[in-house]
Length: 241
Ligand SMILES: Cc1cc2nc3c(=O)[nH]c(=O)nc-3n(C[C@H](O)[C@H](O)[C@H](O)COP(=O)(O)O)c2cc1C
Image (cartoon, rainbow, N blue to C red; front, side, top):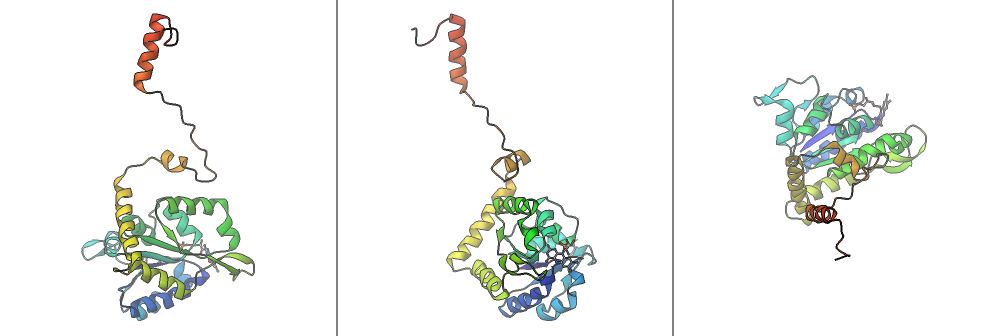
């Protein structure tokens, strides 16, 4: 699987998550954003996963292919923990301005995002809109939970506890469990979604809060229109007949 780590105070918890998942038998590729490097170092992840950790400074190719394509296609599951408001916004907006965002767009695997941020950030309409948009695209959100945040205020925004994240990930990946089936059907669903071309108006028109709904013009069936036209030509109506 691929574990993305972003620039949150909770980033250090991702080391424990990577360690537990590796001990659980999973191959964990870690991608850290530039901002994550202010909180944690690639070496910590390399030490627990026994694999290289990737950053925006990593070479552009891996196994002879573009690194974001290779990492995205290799992953059976993409988990971003913690996921910042910024990363959520980039993913919702379809931006690929850094390695992790590019991997998210290049992967057909199910995606789990575990947000961590200040409660006001989490409740901000812009973030809410991005979350709704991503959920509608089949992205799963694990948390956040409510509690006393590192910024001193209380509310939703805490990263889910690592053991809870681990359990949710393992359940999703278990091949024989009903959730394993969920993972498979999610993969199929996501692949189908990618095949479908959809317009932004379609995407926003289906009730994302804050976005105006398109008024649907009542469409008359072509046959009815023809009947009406012939009635007009004859100067009468069906009732009069
Ligand atoms: C000390 C500090 C802690 C931060 N913690 C968070 C956080 O928990 N969640 C969040 O969304 N942003 C947080 N930020 C802001 C992000 O680091 C910033 O938006 C950054 O651009 C995110 O980049 P990334 O998404 O590429 O990792 C924090 C910033 C600082 C300086």
